[in-house]
Each structure stands twice: as structure tokens, then as C-alpha cells.
Amino acid sequence: MNRPADSAAVRRTNLSRVLRYIEAHGPCARTEIAAATGLVHASVTALIADLIGRGLVEEAGATVSGGRGRPRRLLRIVPGRVWTVVVQVNRWDIRLRVADLAGSAVHIERAPHRAPAGEPEPVAEAIAQVVARAVAQADGAHLGRVVIAVPGPVIGGLVAAAIPFGWGATDLAALVAEHLPDLPCPVELVNDANMAALAEYHALAVAGTSHPDTVAYIRADVGVGGGLLIGGRIHSGSHGMAGEIGHVPVSLDGPPCKCGSRGCLVTYLGLQALTAAAGLGAFTPGQDAAAVRAELDHRLRSGDPRALAALHDAGHALGAAMLAVASAADAGEAILGGYLADWAPWLTPGIDTRLTGRRTAMSAVGFAVSVGILGADATLHGAVHVGRDRILDDPTAVPTGDSGAPATADCAPPVSIGH
Image (cartoon, rainbow, N blue to C red; front, side):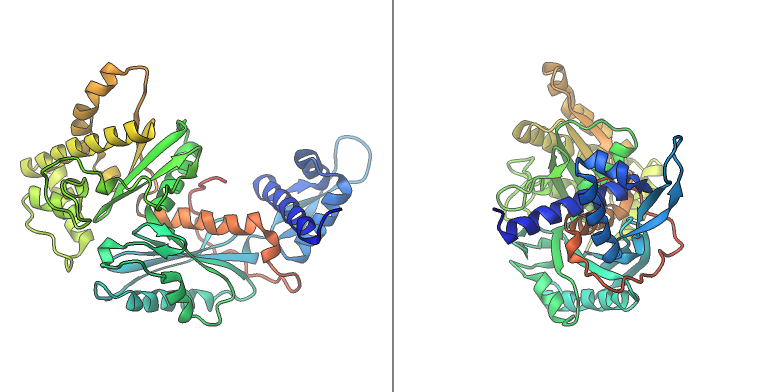
């Protein structure tokens, strides 16, 4: 005899199967759902009644089949019923996106913060302020989750170390929640590079890229980070640092790194290293990173010799790190994101120089280099994917009762990143 807890778990699983099918294939009929999920028709009817009661699914008209019989009533999800609030926090600003259950953006905001290095509390307060403004607009929508993406490994819900901020282990989610005592949903902390890796992986797959089993994602904005995907899922490793290629040493006697080592990839590929090598002077924490990147980009496209040489040398270092990841994790592909994607044409010659020997000696072992397509929004797309998954995995998190929800805002939906 099933225990109540077992029965509840089975019901959650079946609700998820039905909701996911409708989300992916709707409008669709009950008979189609039963055939696809393997659930008996009576169970499907009861599960759909539950989902309708939670406001997640609604009737969408009827269709008449080619034969005789009653018209089939169609079902579709109600995108505006659930909102996911995602936040990407960088050293100088906060980016926020609110998405509905279909993944479409209903609110976007970007706000600077002036939090001093080494103090997480001012950052938490700034995050809470932008989240509060977004939550105030959720008239009738259920808030599924607040997902905060941070630059640093996340272990057990804590930021283990956020080097750009000068933090040690920090419970940033709890700090944010303290400023939002009436928030009706959980706050979840995720690694920003992992979210970007997830988003780019699925976006490229939708665009036609066939990925190998193990894929490394490498991205740079100011520092250099990354993620590792196995079978399309993020692999975090023992300490949340799998795929953090920025701190792979590529030189035994290279420049000192903030992580305590020497010759890390970031000391050759980070924005500070690139601007110095390109003759733009020292990049300081107070500078506008976007303006510095724009100037370096201008010099590259103008054929400035020092800028071209800086990217060529950086490509060499990046190729060396790729070889390390290919050997240690048996990765068959690297996806470039951030400004690495923008500057791939100038990095590629150095990368190829490093990879040529391995490709020649081990021609049967392929290693592809792909360029990301989501740009600066990759992390936000990945975080939206995670937040939506929490509801699709457990529809019982959405209460029954009044399910009046605002319509999705009239704006272009983000690039689909799959399921």
C-alpha cells in the first residue's frame, strides 16, 4: 500500500508530465496527452482538472477529427499565471528580467549599484530593490521563484567565493530575502557562467548544432569563467567549480592571479590583461568596462597592430586551456561566450595554432569550437530556464483558487533554450 508521501510524489510527477507535454505541444487534446504520456484517460482528466484549478492550463476551443464523434477539446498553458524573476549581478550593475511560463519577457530592468568591494550587504540591498519593483507589478501572477546569478562557485546555496566582489563564503540569497520579508517565493542562487552555458548549449542546438556528450563553455566579460555540460546538463563538480576555466594555469611562471596561483588563463584573457597588451593602459575597477571593450573592439576592427597581437596571444593561451579541458574532462566541444564570441575571428588563429598538433596526432578525437549566439543575455536566459523548470517539475507549488493573471507583455520572446 502506498504511503501518502509516495502518492503525493507520484501525483507531482504525473502533473509535471502532463504540464510539460501541453507546454511543448499545445494546444492539444486529452486523448493526445494520454497517448503521449502513457497515462490512462481518467487520470489525465483528473490531472488536467487540477492544472486548470491552479490556473496553469485552460481550454483553447475544440477541433473536429476526420471521423464521427464529439469534437476534441483543446488545452494550452496560461503563460501569465506564473512569473520567474531572474537577476544577474555584476561588479558594477544588476540586470533583471521577469519571464512568464512560456519564457517571454514581461519586464526588463538594468540598474547600477555602488557597493564597495568586500561588502555583500549593499549588493543584497540593491538586488532586493530591483526585485521589489518587479514584484509590485505581478498583479494576479504567481511568483514562482527569484533566481540570482552570481560570478562565483555556488555550493549548498552559498557563494563559495566571489573574487570580483572580494567576498568569501556568503549566503547572498538569505541576505536578499531579509530585505524582502513578504516575498511569497523562494530565492535561489546559481552560478552565472553555468546559466550562460546552459542557455547557449540549447540555443545552438535549436539552431542546428549537434553537440558531443561533454561540452565546455568559456566566456569572458571582465574576468573569465565557464561551465561544463554532460549530456546537456550542468556538471558542477565536487565544489561547484567544474568548467571554471579562467583559473586553469596555462603558464608555470606567468603573472600572479587573485586566486592565489600564477599564470591562470584570466591573466592572459581577462579584460585587464587584454587592454594592457593592446596598449590601452591599465584597466582599473572604477572604469566603465563596456566603454573599454568598445575601444578595444574599435581598434581590432581598424586593424591596430597591438590590438591584433594581443588577441592572437590571448588565443594561444585560450587554446592551451582548451587542451587541458579536453584532456581532463574529455570534452569534445568548446562554446565561446561574452566578448570571446565577439572577438572569435581574432582569437581563432591563436587557438588553431595550439590545437593543430593535437588534432593531427589524434585525428579520430574531434574537438570543435563553436561561437555563442545569445550575447550578454545568455545568463538571464539560462536563469529563466531554471526558474521555469521549478514550476514545470512541480506544478503543486502553484496554489489553487483565483488564477486571474495578467497577459504577457507585448514584447519579443527570448530565444528558446529548450527543455
